[in-house]
Image (cartoon, rainbow, N blue to C red; front, top):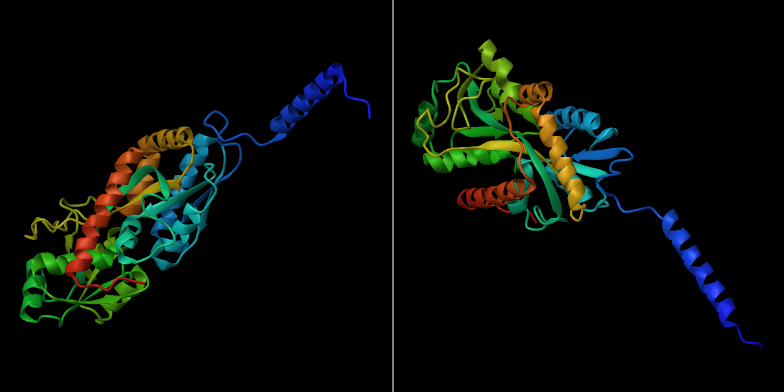
Length: 334
């Protein structure tokens, strides 16, 4: 068989290079901040449609859509205290087209569950915190507990006879109640419900004497006089409930529980995209209309962060709640 001439080999080599170059040109290029985004983005969260997290996600999706020039589509994946959604976010493609809205429950899961399908900090790129908000310790209007010290005195007189309701086992509300008991040196029995509405119904019906609830959802009942707010769980009063003292004011020194919400992306999302998302989130939070909407939805305080500040927050929250779980002798979930 005749050999291939040097000239033919040269022509073949150039043709092969052109073909390879053409293939690379047709292949999708890695995402970068200059071209990102060029298609819709998913925003996942782990709670029921119509709830507080869903309302937050929709405010954020609208704000980011206007700034990024692409639809940001909210997708609820409720279940397991947000763990189903967190696992879906962690396992999504790290291209910037899947984001997640996580709350304080994300850090609690990091210590309450013995094993998760993801690591609460290392499986994600943090984007920014969004908002912080307090909870409220509340009783029925005809309760003999007129103040938080009254409630503490009642619980001390009858250890384990008083119960407190929350939105569910392992929620920030639940652990806020447990922290109340350890900080005040009292013993109460936790009664979990599936959301704020059932816990409020049980309080009004006399099934539980006290609940730890979401301020924005209890504000109307407190203002109407059906429910008495004994204290909010932040160090200072919330504008949503200006007549309800903070736990600190009520004499419970060192007690501070504020839940939060923030944005994450899957681990490995390019740094320039994370930086762009952080910058656009900061711009969104500075918008007076968005700020007002977020604060109205939560009764809280809008506060953005750097990605590293959010990572530090989650790690510190995991350490805090781990101590509370140990002191309350709560069995960790397999």
